[in-house]
Structures are given as structure tokens and as C-alpha cells.
Amino acid sequence: MHTTEPRPMSARKSDALSGRARVPGDKSISHRALMFGGLAAGETRITGLLEGEDVLRTGEAMKAMGATIEKHGDEWIATGTGNGALLEPKEPLDFGNAGTGVRLTMGLVGSYDMTTRFIGDASLSKRPMGRVLDPLKEMGLQVVSAEPGDRLPITLRGPKHAAPISYRVPMPSAQVKSAVLLAALNTPGVTTVIEPVATRDHTEKMLAGFGASLEVETDADGVRHIRIEGQPKLTGQTIAVPGDPSSAAFPLVAALIVPGSDVVIENMLMNPTRTGLVTTLMEMGADIEILDRRNEGGEDVADLRVRGSELKGVTVPEDRAPSMIDEYPVLAVAASFAEGDTVMQGLEELRVKESDRLSAVAEGLKANGVDCEEGEASLRVTGRPGGKGLGGGTVKTHLDHRIAMSFLVMGLATEKPVTIDDQTMIATSFPDFTALMTRLGATLD
Image 1 (tube, rainbow, N blue to C red):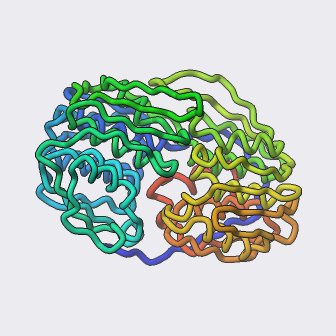
Image 2: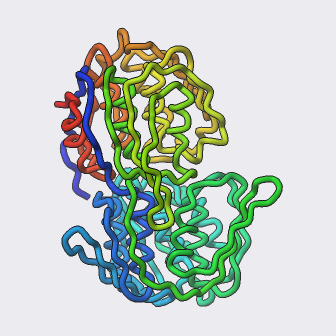
């Protein structure tokens, strides 16, 4: 495992931001595009892929199981093995820091009669895998070995014949739902996932696009029942990956809190399961104009024009959490500049991200003079319009890319600079972050 020396970085008060920004391709869709492209028969052509380390690890894993994946110019071309025809990897699959990649791949291989070993970096090895493995065990998967608490390194042995299940997801998690749907691809019969709270639905949309027979019904109580027929024929597709809302969140909030800013964010994914942050910021009084709504590859896409705004505190409804789970750190930063209190609830999921993201956010805010109160699954932030008296602290990122970028955004509008202890892991999700922000006028050093 290579550990690099930490590289601190500071952000300081900037003049109005302006210009156009195109953020990297959506991470969730990029992982799935390489995965399904590596599985489906024939050729899948992908443009706009997020070329961060996490996504490329998923590509490497698919190659280790028989797919061919190559880059030609701006396009990635995957030639798949055909559904049901993945090969047992000879070496352990190394997912680095990629939580989505490792959990989805566990689902994909979970119904194959083969042994697969999963390893990752120090951060990924701290993250529990049990909630993905629980439903897979019901389908016949055996966990041959694992570190305590179902942590990596983990060796899995799939069944001779996987059994279809009906599984009610105990907590809102797109990763758990997706793992079961992917295991169903090599399982005879109909597998059902019951989802009481809707989460991002890229797996369902994309599987249907590749030819899987899948139906989604929402019952009277708003509970989603997703049924998938096992062992479908999947055929290669052409995919244009839209811009990642979780990455767009950083220039978007920066433009709101730096007075006088006027920024256009191009080609952003507007899938309703992912736009909780935009909805919340608009409730806070953000000046966000949605331009040129269009559909690309089954997903809604638009350009956003964002101007510097005076924000007001709001209470974010708990049921919105799954549609903006990765955006709470940067929302907390926006809330630091809003008038009054912003209350965020239903944040249990943040405790099992790259870091205990809830504590990391609260610590970073306090280090920079923001009044906030951390609950078991909640956060209350009392803002100071204009960022008066804020900044001057160093934030512990805990190797978490979203904590790093959120607090760099904060420093662009505080009185005193904000420093993060390490910027190296930003490359896992947003390699171009510093360059893009600097082009818009941000002062980062």
C-alpha cells in the first residue's frame, strides 16, 4: 500500500466567481457503465466517464474477470464477457478507496460459482461490508474469510446455483439494493428488492437499458418493489455519462456564498433521486436557474446558472437524505453563511462513509468558528451572513475527498483562510477540482 505525504492546501477570500464549469461525469453512473459494459455481450461505448481512481478500479476488476476495456480518444470501449460468463479472477481485486465499486462488485460476483478476494486501502478496509453481504448470504454466498466486523480483506465463495430472494432493504442504501439486483443477474427466477425509502435508481435504469427484464411498482405507502428476472441477455449500449451532482455541488455552493458570483454549471444530472441539494438550496433562497432541460441516455440533464445569494436557514426534511447524502458536508458549509439555523436530520448513513462524515463536518465547522451542534443522526448549523469572524482553522479531512473539497469551498468566503490537512485524495472523485475552481476565480494555494 503506497502512502503519500499529506499535502495541505488553503482557500482564501476570493473575488466574485464567474465563468462556465463542466464537472466530471457522474461517479455512480460511471461505475455502472464500466461494470455493465464489461458484462454485456458485444461492445459498449462510453463518453464523459469520470476518470477518477475509484471508477478505474471498477474497470480493472471487470478486466480481471474477462472483459476488455480500452480508451480510444474521448471514448471508452468495453467488450463484455456476456451475462453469466464472468471468469474467476486469478489475483485479489484491489478497490483502493472505492466503496461503491467494491460493494457493487460483491453483488455481481456473489451468485457465481467461484472464489473472489477483495482488498482495498486503509480507509476502505475500515468500512463495514456486512449489510451488502447479508442479502447475498441468503442467495447462497459464503464468506470464506473477513476481518472482524465484515471488513476487507474479504474472500467470498459463490454458490453452485444461487437462489432468488425477496429482500426488504433495512436502511436506505442504493449500494445494498444494487448489490442484490446485480447478484440476480446470474440467479434463475425472479428476485425482488423492497425499498421503503427510494434511493438513487441508476442501477434499475441502466440494467433496463442493457436489456434486463425489470419492473418497479410503488405501492400505496410509497414503498418500491423492484422485480428482476434472472439470467437476462444483456447487450452492449452507447452511454453518455452526465455531470455528477455531487461534484457540481462544490462550484455551485461556492458561487452562492461568494458575493457577486455568476457561474454556469453545464450538463448536470437532474435525476430526481439526486437533486436534493438543489431543492434545499432553493428553499434557502439560492438564485439557481435551470436551463435547457434535456434527456440523455434515459437520464434528465440540465445546465444550472448560479448567482451569489443571501441564504436563510431551513430544516431539511429527513426523507430527503437519500437524494443528497453525499452533499451534506457542502450544505453545512452553505448553512454557515445563512441567516439563522439550518437543521439536518436522518444522517445515520454519514457515519459509514469514507470517514465518520458527520463528526468530521462538525469538527471542521467548529475549527473555523461556526456554531454547530452534532446529534446522533443530526446536525444544526447557526450561520453568520457574510462569514463574519469565520475561518482561520485547519480541518482534519480523515482522507475524505468530500470533507476536503467542502472546506476549501468554505475558505473562499470566510474572513480568514481555511486550511485542509491533505488534498491528495481529491483525485479519487474530482481530479480537476483545483484547476476548475481556479479558472472560475477561486484563490487556492
